[in-house]
Image 1 (cartoon, one colour):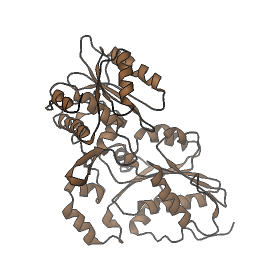
Image 2 (image 1 turned 30 degrees about the vertical axis):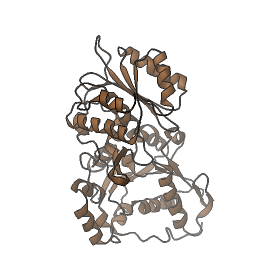
Image 3 (image 1 turned 120 degrees about the vertical axis):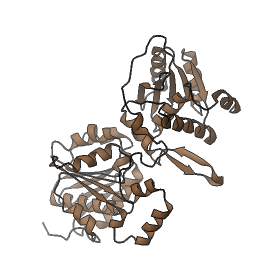
Image 4 (image 1 turned 60 degrees about the horizontal axis):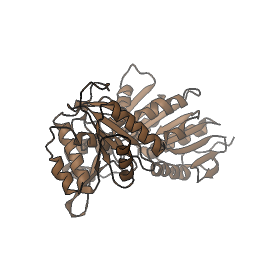
Length: 407
């Protein structure tokens, strides 16, 4: 086979070279914004695909748009003579040596099953659920002794932090971790970084530019790690429970959360792609089991008829119709409860991750909205917030607020 010069148009800076020179099977790179992690990872992927003929490589990102960026980079960086075909619809690149590189989204984890992978890049790893690695991607590397590279900017001390910590442990021979702050990129002007240091909150700058794993990810909910303890529990006789139901639409999950009067989560159910009939039966069965827990339901849009059906099936429901203002009140009530440690959650990874990445967005006129980053879910957060809306001891006058919304 003709020898070709690898990775045209790519001149790695010193930090990128350090990543390339690692021989660890599993590498974890915590990177500041604009450090060059995507470019470095695409170079690693091309190199591996060329050096191992007939191999299969996966690039997995939280949303399709991010994997498409990497797909476009690989197409441009592929050395002359190495490319056999480009499949734009499937986002797949075939090399003349029989290797294939595919670019995937983690939005539907089931679509990532059933493959044996030689090389894997997990992009923006902090925004993915740890279960995706443990239950889907790690097993896919086993039969071929595949390698993996995790890249991303930290977002609190979630599963990405735990992988990073593993790579810092000298006893983990297969793992190596790196911290690459934005300033490590010589193409970013120092005055630009200094301006960011002066204008951003200290925690945000430390996370986004210094690539540090700060305790709470500079997010909306502070103190999340302090409320994680215990486990789910069966119902107690005569205990009064409150539930929150966020109804899945299109690609969202349906989530039911039940809490006891002291604010501890005792029941959690998250499911996807089921019929309305099965969903209503599943919800009704759970809330009846917990002494007919009062269920606060997102009654916006499709939620209204479902709310009526649940009531007919014997569930004690109250509707909560979402506007920007009502969602803000709901979220701010949960912020207060978490800050005062009046909510306790078991270590449910999906819930913890959503709480960590939940963010605010500035709207015209000085208003603020709350939600998950683009392409991510906030179903668990909203379900918990709805359940928390019904417990005693909140500082929000619920009945007055609900009346102003016309309930």
